[in-house]
Structure formats: C-alpha cells, structure tokens
Length: 320
Length: 320
Image (spheres, rainbow over the protein chains, first blue to last red):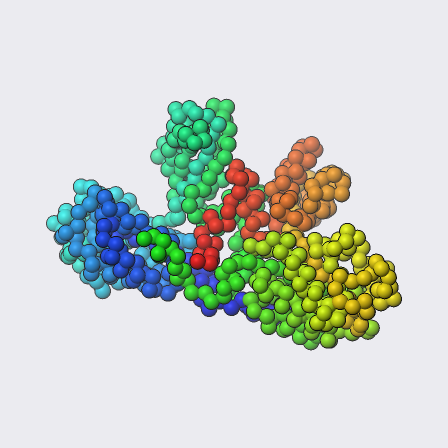
C-alpha cells in the first residue's frame, strides 16, 4: 500500500531536468571584455536555452575577455554552450582582437564541469558532442583539452594556447600534423579556434594558523601542494592576512572527489603541529557542490559515505 | 551589468513555495490501522493540498493506528493537515475504536516539524492556526502539546494522553478545569479530541564500538543521555549487534540544532576512551535535514557555520 502513495510526487514542479538534478556547470571564455552589448547578446543566447541559470559574468577590459559561469541540466548543456559560441563567432572578429590574455578564438575556452548526478566521463561526452557541432555546423577548428583531451600533449591548456602561441600563430601553423583539430576544418577564420573540454569543480579553501610567520606558512603551503610532494589535487600558497593578523594557507582543490576538503585541512593541521601551531579557522570561498560537503562529513563521522538521498531536501527533489 | 543577469532565474519551476524552500514536515497519527480504504481517503485529502509530498504511510493493525509522514510548504501546512483531519473525523468513530495504543481521537496527534527555512516558533504558529480551525470548523476539542503547549503540564504528550487516560476518560472529565481544551468545545463527539503541536526533527543516529561488552555499552549510553547527566537532547540505549559483532550506541537526537550530531559522536568517543575503546563507524538512520549536515561539518572544519547558500545546488533553488 505504501508504494502506491510513495510513487506519487505531489510537489508540482514542471522542470523535469531540474527534478532529476543532473546538473552541469559551464564556464565559457569569450574574447571580448570591452563591448557590453556583445557580451549581452552572447549571454542572451545562452540564457535562451532551457534550464540555464547564469551564475556570474565577468568582463575584463584589460584582457579584453569575458568569463560567463552558468548551470544547466545535462540534457541541455551542449545546446546552451553551442548557442553562446554561435553568437560569439558571429560578433567577434579575431583579426581585430587585442588583449593581454592569450587567446585562440571568439569562444576561446569552454569547459564542462560535473555538478550533480553527472560524472566527469559524461562531461567528456558533452565536450565531444559540442566539439563535433561547433566543428561541423560553425566550421570552427576545435581542440579538446583537459579530461576530454585526445592526446596527452593537449591535456594542459597552457600546452595548447599560451602567450607565444595564440590565434595568429595557429592561423599559420594549423596545417601542420600536430595542429590537426579534433573537429572542424584545418582552416582558421575570423572566429578563430575553440578549446573545449571537461574538468572537475574547483574549490577555493583557506585555512588560518595562529602565527604571523610567513616563512613557516610558506613551508606548510609547500608541503601541501601536489608539485612539491603534497596532495595530488591541491594548489597552495601562503599569505599574511592583516585583518586577522594570521597566516592563511590558501588552497585550490582541483578534484574534491579524489582530494576532499577534510584531507587538505587535516594535512595542514599535521604539518602545522611540527611548528607547534594550530588551525584557528577555515573558510570556503564561493559555492561548493553538496557532494563535497557530504564526502568530508562522512570522514569525520566514521562513515564510508553519506548518500545525497539521505538528505531530506534531496529526497524531495528526486524524480518519482 | 552582472546584476541584471544574476537576478534572472532561468530554471523554470512553477512552484513558488518550493522554490523558497520553506518546508515543514507533518506526522499526523490517525486512529485506524485496519481499513486501508479509510487511510487512503485521509491520505487522498492531504495529497489534494498544494505542495504536499507524502514520504511514508505506516498502518499498524495491532495498534489500530496509522502514521502518515508528509512534507509541505509552510504556506500550505495548515490546510494540508486540516484536510486530513476533516476526513478522518468524518470516517472514524471513536465509540467503535479499539487498539493497544492510547488514543484521544480520530486524528490523534498532529505535530509540525521545521525542515527548511522555518523556525520551531513558526511551527508553533502553525499548530495554533490548525488548532483554531479544527476547534471552530470541526467542533473538535484541541490540546496543544510539546513546543506549542500553553501549559507546562501539556508539554509532554504522555501527560496528556496515556494508557490510563484516553478517549473514554476524557469524555467523562472534559468539563473539569484542567481539561478545558485550547480550542474547540468542551464536548467530546465521535471524532474525539486532537493533540496538535510542534516539535523538532528527530535524528536516529548509531555509533559502533570495537567491543562486545554490553555492560560497557550501557555505561556509555547512560553517560550520553540527558536524564542521566549527558547531552540535553539525546536519548540513548546500548545494543549488541550480532551482524557486526559490536556494541551499538543507539541515539535519538531530539533537537539537532542544539545538540548536533558531531557532539553526540565526540562524546561517545570521549566516554569510550576511558575503557580503551574506539569508534569503528557510525550511521544515520532515515533522512536528515541538510542543516544537520552543515552544522556538524562546520565544527570539524573549524568554521562558525556553513550557510546553506554556500551549497551550489541550493543557490539554484533560491527565489530570485
């Protein structure tokens, strides 16, 4: 008997994609940070797609570059990004573009980031589908990068596009074997090329220590970061924060699934102990996915994991 | 410029009450656990209310009693409960009711529980509004209990209704000063009386220890529970769990805002230490509100609090 009731969802929400909570973040970079009417038209095209929610728009005049952050259902993610790229390609002429930041094209870099109910592998699929459409429908060369890369040499964005190899250099060298695009023609038009990929969500996380000694802070930051022998998905720096009169270990956690918040904090604590220092507080900068909260709490509560379905508010959102 | 975009919510959800996430749980008990057509009609009336989602229905034949658990927006909570009570009052005749469990009326006990964006004080308001309507529109005597109680003697449910004072006794004594109802007439009809109130969410939480010694388990459970000098909002018992070959400290946290999960766990750990024992794991039984997760994690991360607005999925739900 229970079942017959349980199967009926009485909260009336029409948005099926939202209900299913399969959400993706997309952070496309466009090569115009000066003309707000151009950026408005691009954002308008993205917003015209079902289920899109714009979280942030940053226009940077000196870089002549804008970064749009939006959330979209998995099903609409390719469409939303494509709509933005199409408008950007029609409005931005790379022949006339100047700015400090290295750039390849009108829609320069387009990463998909898994947020909820979506794997990084599925975001790789999104990147490929988007790349295929951008290549064939807009005739723009597309390079897959990061998790979506088809060659190791294209995993790091900086290996593809940097201050010494930009739009102008690509235009000359795209016929070389190493620059054959993953999708689209080996011809660079006025919209340039796009670099499309999938990467994990980045958490900005700071831990404060009861010291003013920046040298100690730097040693601890070094012990934490991947490239110096620390945790695999941590980038870290030390700062003296005047307002708090304390040292801050400022970290980027680039894959919270594999290197969770708790492990970064506890390793700071462990390294600080050697100098007789303690953690005074920590802070999360910006938004974090629910899963990053649950995987850290499950550690402290001695649980293997806490399923999001244990959260009452989530239970309510489930598709019935 | 950012603002003009940020203020536009592009996820199309029509349910305004849900968007605002002001949610209340209601767990009415009805005095029929045998006739499923009666229970279906009651549940049907509750479900007919906007924003209601039924989470669970338990029919207990030996107690001749059913417990319905539903979630509803704050704005619709009184209506949803009233619709159920009205149908219950028309279908259940207390003159013919028999069962093991003490009972006062057709709709016996009706608690409101804050889930999200609602305070216990606001749930007290809901209880009063519902009581007023049940009293005046259905002519049913109503007693407010728990947080909604108007007298200290009515705070504990067991002080109001127990195996020695039920429907039959109330019918005889309702004219006494001490039994004047908070709402409705001092007359008990075939629908009996209803006990309406507000209480906090209850979390069932178990902690396992690396021992098989039930005596030690009992000592630790005693140290934890409120009435024996432990934590104010903890009820605890010790069990030997055969499948795990370990002792389980089984707790009910009756107010996770005031006595959070982490404090219960850490006190078990502290008491276990005295016997050289460690916590092996812990488990949350059933669903928990997101706030109970956030307030425990904030402790471990040395943060004053983690706002639910830091959670990306929540940001998406916010009313714009």
